[in-house]
Figure (cartoon, rainbow, N blue to C red):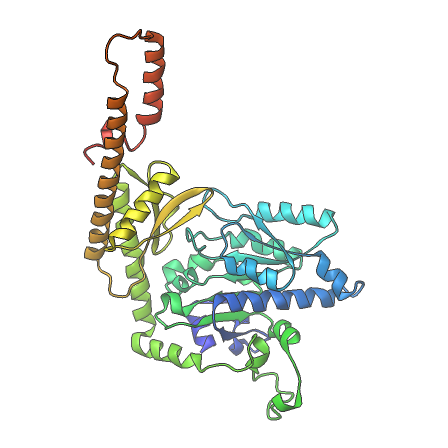
Length: 405
């Protein structure tokens, strides 16, 4: 099953059992499990490599890296593994770049630390940003670091040849995971994880006790004993539900659904761009559109609250680089273009009500400030007030040019 999925993604042969090498795949429960297994295996490998220090001394020096946009599971895995992790800044497209990683590694090595792990993202949670794997990968190879790619949602897009670019650079990774329960219509939980060298994992997780020995597998390196690839001992028959999905939809059916979601997301992006009151926050890569009203975070928080309180449409907001925005996510299997149009009409309706309430509030403030006529008026102060009003109101969603939107 893992080889079938890997072939659908056009993964490098070294990740597949069929290659005859040391690679292979395993179904974990979630991406959290996948990254935890990866970082523990990477930690164990680094400790073995530094024989000049005790395990405790090595552990104190290990440092992992991820981006400020990465899913929280990477940071949690580092906490559980008792290793230091650094959240690195991203570029204008919310992507982690090679020069940023290289600078962080250089700084930490100068302090006597040991860089050992990178948690890269293919499709961050907030903006679906894709880290530049082709820049990050060679750096990890040069520094002998483990590069794990979290492609929980976006990784599935690679089954479409025209979207395979999302995992360009996967050949540099030590491990890679995606969640079929996110975009391949498999019910939760199911996280597919591949590694180039399964021995890195089994050396970290193997516990050899008599009552767990399978004498038929003793010495057989071709048959995986999956209890040594994971946290838990027992495991459900998860591959069966993946098999049923493949039987029901086929590869083409799954490709068509992903393409449809991407197309509908682009339709929504077009609607947003057609309304001058709104703006797109991040490049629309796949099935998620990040957008906001032109204005401050408070305005968009209120819009988010109004939309969700209305209960016709539900949007999950997020914050990146200090900017609060809304996220339109296309993943429901039966969504149509009419649903996208309807959702946008609800969003516009709530935006109209919000902006009208803001206009009314501003007009009320102006009315309260009206002069009764007898007091001395400083013309210079009036000029300053008019200039300030122009700067603060004229280019905001509350200006006259937006009243008819």
